[in-house]
Length: 338
Image 1 (cartoon, helix red, strand yellow):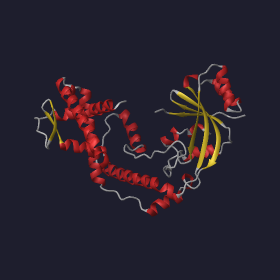
Image 2 (tube, rainbow, N blue to C red):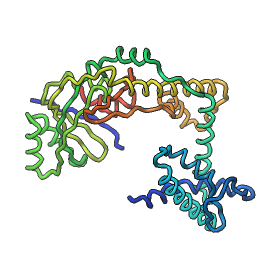
Image 3 (cartoon, helix red, strand yellow):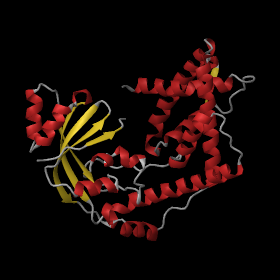
Image 4 (cartoon, rainbow, N blue to C red):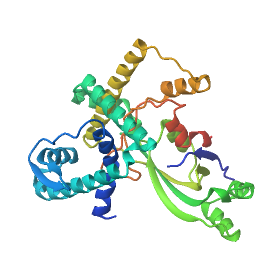
């Protein structure tokens, strides 16, 4: 008889529409910043005029640089980006007319955006150019983490997806007594519970080490349950297979991961220095402890490394030593796989 276990996991058009959306997001900040003081003439050769407001080469070059447009695509991209700048200027003009830039929520959003831009610019200036990881550092990480590379495992799973509202004691009992996921599916059909079937694969590089260890200890066919907000996954461990990768395959992502980590470490060190030198007072006693613990456990600007869900030519890279109590481990259902 398989024992079902429960893990609680917290959840997560056209080119014209995209242009308007991007323009709308930017225009509020532009409108708010330009509302302070007299209007200044924009520098650079004018490319277009929107109700008397010029759009210049300098503006277009800035958009091209931010979009990281390749040389072969510059001509087409410049036309599209110019239209985007026109859309933005139109929205900015209308926002100024109806005083959108004076709305308290908009003012707050502008101040937040300005603070983030300034803070990020300072951090970038302070950190400077971080050296890329050396070949030796990449090889050392590869050798020290065989579970992600030479000993990487692949977990193949089958799932039945139901609404969390349909999860009840009767279904848990059915999971406990079921021998296969098909038995569970038959129970759902008999009891007229809607469900969808799917399959997925994860590797030991995708998962927290604690969860990988739990899955490795399970027999094939083991049933378990994972809750993800409004939906619940009824899962059967179908197979565990070796899925190793070589240093040559893994090196590019290891290098990027180590580079991100260097940036994060430098940013954390600067924040630690600033906090040590500052006088910080928590005026709201109820929120003080929560704020302090949040800062201690979760730095705001931690770089993340994403990994593919299924086996692919690219090689996923995971942090070398996640803390057992980290939110990442909890998110991946470690607590429920006992």
